[in-house]
Amino acid sequence: MDYKYIEQLLGRYWQCETSIEEEQILRVFFSQKGIPDDLRPYQSLFVYEQSLSNEKLGEDFDNKILERISAPVVKARKLTLVGRFMPMLRAAAMVAILFTLGNVAQQTFFANDKNVLDYNYASYKDTYSDPKMAYEQISSALQKVSKGINKSHKLMADSLHRPNGADTGANHIDVEE
Amino acid sequence: MEKVMNLNMDDGMMKMISDLKSMQMVTAKIHVKRYYHEAVALAKKNADRFLPYASYGRKKLNYEIMIRKRRKAIVELVMLMCEDDNFSVINFTGNMDRRFIDKLASSMGANSR
Image (cartoon, rainbow over all chains, first blue to last red; front, top):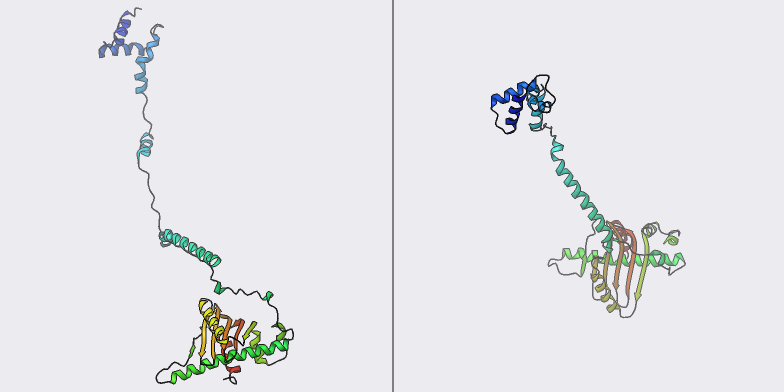
């Protein structure tokens, strides 16, 4: 069989000179069976359109596309009162912890000496080895202190009764419990 | 103090001594007024350590009583005394409180006024 016409059409096809009808002739020719070997390499070029036209979209195609292009759905969460204030509670807890640590550091490193009993009794040496002598001295000292306190108290009491509030030379400061 | 506590003495006095840890007393019979004023000045210099508790001042007799507190307890009591020819510094340390001082004033001071 003479395929000269087909070869001419192919030559014009490569030159982009074929008309739509001529290209249709080529498609019809290559879609049939029994294509000669020298023309078989060109068959797939004219047949692919038909094979692709048989392909159809699956039924889940729409869903797949919509899934890809649709915005993510944000599910609403129920906020409790505690959950709503949780960030604030966390901040308050951090502040409380820092405040406590600061206080501890201050007490540890910067404690005022007046609150520390700094007497080393182990270094004391008894003046009297006889307890009775020591007792007498302690009693004597306590009596002197008592005398001083009572004199101060007495004159404070007297000053309250003085009409002009004259200075009695006594002062007393209440010790808070 | 521990040895003193073993004595069988007046209960009231022993109770008071039981609150004490130490007692120190320094006396001087010369430069009495000078020592007294220096001691008072030194106490005032350490005003953050010693709080004034009571004072009494007359021509021939002067007292300054100061306390040092630790929280609510009186841990130290210091008395500066200046009489005619005698200067004394009396220092008590221990665990005292207002009741101790009141008892000190009442039970021992009745005869000393």
